[in-house]
Image (tube, rainbow, N blue to C red; front, side, top):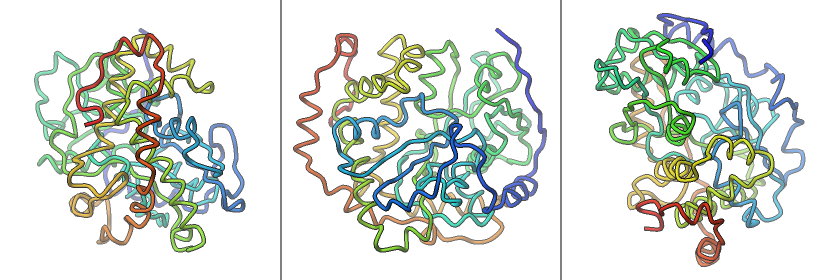
Length: 386
C-alpha cells in the first residue's frame, strides 16, 4: 500500500482552533464547490442548492435525496446537490456567501461557524443518533472508551474535524487537550490502517464503506453511548426569517422526509436507486461490489436518521435537550467562547409541514419497486419498515 504523507498538527489547542475558525471570515468567497462557483441561489425563489460536508457525492449517505428525485417528491422545485471542498466549514461559508442555500454539517463544525459569526439556523435534524464513531486497528488493546484517546493520535480528513472529536472526548470524561491530531485528507482511513495514528474519526455508512475497501477496524459507535445529536441542515437566518420562503423550504424538506420514509420501508430499493444515479453510480458500484455491504452502509445511516422514533415528532425533528448537552459541553471546553441556547440556533418550524405527506403513496412506491436480482438476493435489514 502506498505510504501517505500526513501534515501533523500535534497538540492543537481549542483556542487556536477557534481563532482559525474566526479567521475564516463570513465574507470570504468560496473558490470552488465541486469545481463550480454558484450565483446567489435565492434569486430563483423556487430552487434549493444543498451542499455536502464531504468532498464527494459518491456515497450512500444522500439516498433520501436520490429517492425523492426518482419519484418526484420535490415537485416542481429545482434542486441541486454539490460537494464542498474538504475543509470543515466550507459548506457553511458557501451558504453564508449565497453560493448555496442549505448546508449539512456536524454539530461541532456548526459550532465553529457560530463562533466565527456565520449566522445560520439549523432547520432539519438529519441525524437523530450520534453518527460519529472512533476507529482503531484490531491489534490495539489500549482503546476501550473515547476517553482513552487522551495521549493518543487521531487521524482526520481535515484538521477542523477535531471540533467533532474534542466534544466526544469531553463527553466520555476525557481531556481533549491531551489528544493529538493529524490531517491526512481523503486518505485518513488508509493512514490509520498503516499505523500512522492510534485512531481515526469515522461515521455510520462510511464504516461499511471502509470495510468494502478492505479497511477492517474495531469501532466505538457513537449511537451506542453518545447523547449528542448528529448532522443537521442549516440555512441562512435571513432566509429563515423570510416568511415568503417558508413554503419553499417546507416543500423541499418534505421531499427529504418522503425519501427517508421510503428508505426505512425498503432499504434495498433505496440503495439500488442511489447506485443507479448516473453521476455517482459507477464509483459506488466499484466501491460496493458486494451489494450486501452496500445495503449495510445505507442501513447504518438509516438507523441514525430515524433514531428513537417513538420519542421524535417526525423526520427532521431536533431534540433540544440533546443540543443543550452538546452546547454546554463545547462551552465547557472552550470551543464556544459564549453561552448559546439551543433555541437560538435550532428550529423545528418546518418539521410538521415536511412530515405532512401522503404515506400511502410512499408505501406503495416502496412496496412496488422492482429490485434488481443482485439486490433481491440481499437479506432485508432487521427493523426495516417496523
